[in-house]
Image 1 (cartoon, rainbow, N blue to C red):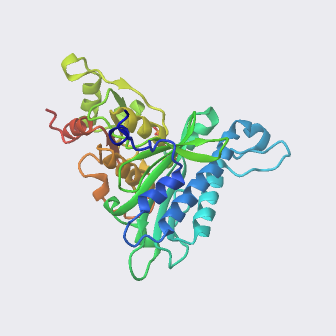
Image 2: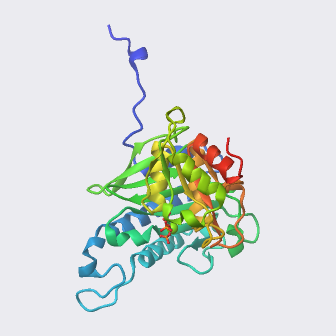
Amino acid sequence: MVDTKSSFRPPSLVGTTLEEHILLGMRGAPGATGDFASLLNALSLAVRIINARVRAAGLAGVFGYTGETNVHGEQVQKLDEYANEVLCTVIERSGRCAVIASEELAEARMCNPDGNYMVAFDPLDGSSNIDVNVSIGTIFSIFRAPEGVVSTTSLLRPGRELIAAGYAVYGSSTTIVLSTGQGVHEFTLDPSAGEFFLSRPNLRCPTRGKTYSINEGNFASWSKGIQRWSQFVKSEDKALGLPMGHRYVGSLVADAHRTLLKGGIFAYPADRKNAEGKLRLLYEAQPMAFLMEQAGGLATDGVRDILDIVPTDPHAKVPLILGSHDDVKVYKEFAAGSPT
Ligand code: AHM
Ligand code: MG
């Protein structure tokens, strides 16, 4: 006889839609009003709209999506500007957002002063890769709006206060990786259904990885400590798992996504040209650091946890090093000039 009690297995969550997942996460949450779910759904809508345009980017010569003139002789908007407009419009229309900041906006912008949330985003990260059909993405982060008067500077907060962050990768498939502070989950777009389905729940970044990811062309302009670290990860030492392999796409979303899934380390340190690093704290480093910590990894500027740093400006830059716990620790020792 089948023992129905012991043979009962809860249904797998794989295959639930992003919308269901968001609603499930809110169930029973104190003070849940549905505003947060609406905002996340608005973001997922924006990603689907941007995805449709990105998928046609190969037809640039026909439609002119990368900023050139199309077959009709018209000047067409660049993809990153288009992605920015889609996000601004969809978020503003949701009515849930008080302030937005974007890589494509010179200043942060007020939306609905009564909105409960503030959103920062990089509409199309890695856009220099569009022309060569390499993965690009959208990065976003969400803060709760403070009580009382909200202004455009209210967004300048430490990443520790984030309530959610995520990114979309427009790669061989389109995925959203999202955390609302309860682990990191990956959703994949089924283009025929137009829906994101949970494809990998509870992503964990391995404690150590096999690859390092950095623009090696900048070697000559790094500090001595970082140069020594780069030589160390390339050196031969079987016991230490060295040399590490090298992978560098040049799109933060793609390099960070691989690092999150497979482990290892991604680094964009300061160099002579970029004294503060190249990547932006508010809409690139903070959301990636939030996701990485949620997945058990680390994110640092070499000394401080990224999530402890307060942006002085929406476009402030920061050195960004993230990935497997052990690999980032070794990096920090070299960066501080005291390798073990
Ligand atoms: P973007 O947001 O303007 O596209 O620029 C940021 C990109 C990141 O995606 C990537 O990690 C970095 O710039 C690559 O820089 P480099 O070409 O200097 O290696
Ligand atoms: Mg970017």
